Amino acid sequence: RAGWPMTETARRSLTERLKAQAYGVGFDLAGVVALGEPATRAEFDAWLAAGNHAEMSYLDGAGAVLRRDTRLPHEGATHALVVAINYGGREPSGAVARYARGDDYHELLRAKLREVQAWLERELGRPVNARPYVDSGPVLERDLAQRAGLGWFGKNTMLINPDHGSFLFLASLFVDVELEVDAPFEADRCGSCTRCLEACPTQAFTSARVLDASRCISYLTIELRGAIP
Image (cartoon, rainbow, N blue to C red; front, side):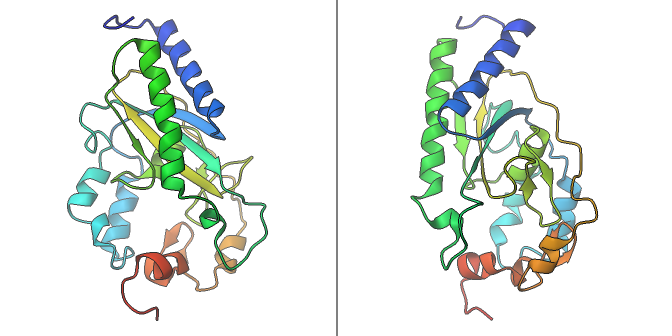
């Protein structure tokens, strides 16, 4: 009930039902994480220091400060429901990227998260201080997803899930609700495989799990404001 502290059993039950709601609105993966300093903060800082973010200045400065602690972007939030949805990894390749062949994923995923938020508010009997993030805020999404148990960081820098691969949209719902957190995905299942590094047509990976954005086709066709080299 509204205003009542939850027991551990009630918190666990609420969390499981919350994730069930996420699956019910169409997400393929769901997990919960407590907000705080990202596990990959040091790697993020080193990536910035090396200039690998190219002209994406929003990733540095004030944006970097917010990304170094997930408690900062939305005041009052303590936990996040982290979700993922497969956008067609088995679809044939073509001139248009798989992720861009449908409607704007930002709007679609945000609407689904709002549905989940509405359910949570009905369940708790109170408004929830919440905010959905869909690739649109100062949040290290992959870090949240790995800590929520959704997958591991591949050598291609993408989050990889054993069942769904790396063709995933990541999103999260920040909430002011104490939830039961999931165990992080600790295993590295890439092994000795380097197929992704070898397949990159512009050789944008300076090493495994390190991407030089200035050489990435996604950066060149979306983020770069000048002429493509």
